[in-house]
Image 1 (cartoon, rainbow, N blue to C red):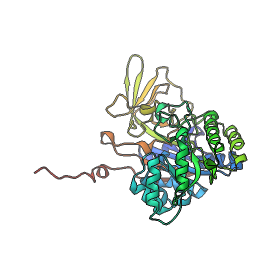
Image 2: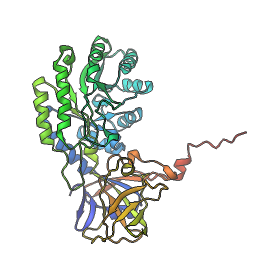
Image 3: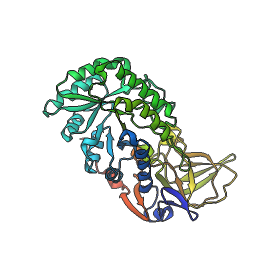
Image 4: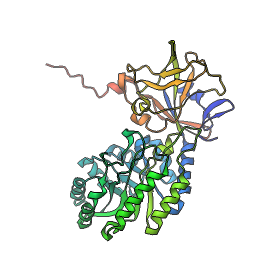
Length: 418
């Protein structure tokens, strides 16, 4: 059994009952299925095999080093957007030659750290970055491989906060402005243009925008010999959409066929930067019921998880399925809002849900929470960060201890005004 699934009437992560984890480790608790992550990785390898895909896991989706080690052993490289993420990937034993260092605002110390680590590719976001990367690269005595992140002005038809490939978004270089920057890189003794990079946004379920963007980049390459000189790969970024745990995600075969038609005649390999696609459905947030507050039209089910642990419903209007740990319980007719203890009306995990009668202490699982859950968690209301567990087969591994109040206070300075 793989992933977050019911087995013999009880919700499991791989072969491990979630109730046992909640009882033993407390809640809120993030639980991830290693088997589900690896199964999704295999899907990508199979679908894009003809394009010799270089899979660079987007560390921002779930940055726990245990997840990084799992994927590194499977052959993944890493997509990084900060010096901190670079350090995580290095500590997880990643091969820097398989790293893509991205990010719209790279600081000098981050550029220096990435150059020292000898990352495989820098994704360049602006003309100023060309100058700064070149300046720091001069000190290494090595040629540095770079990709130009292009903004193809393609509407990904996703939430405005996670749309990144339209002209009004801050990311990338408009195609109309890219040619002089290509020439600038070619003139550099320190930089080598090896790839073009595009990232349209997150939660894309239609292959169309991916292929439209790739087509525009291919047209840019075909327009001038200088645009394609030295370019060996096309990086489509990430954003592969997922639905709920029991539904089909983006149609990979259709997407792969489209990329093959565009890339193979030009001798290009494909780079991918999946994040949510690999870990989203592989994780859940386990929580306990604290109270039930009754109203005329609906009730509030107050649980011990909150927007501090999972901000996506409040920030993106994300809908996460919320289920009891026992299968087949009859839902009540009256809907409930599943809410947390944080002092915000935006503190909800789900609205108007049909759930069974649940007593104080009963467990619930918030599904599709493996991506952008813990990695976006906060200590708002001085709440401690939750523990994390990774399951594989019948085994469970604690990969992050629950934070304590002492951890929160340790960096505060108690100096008094004099």
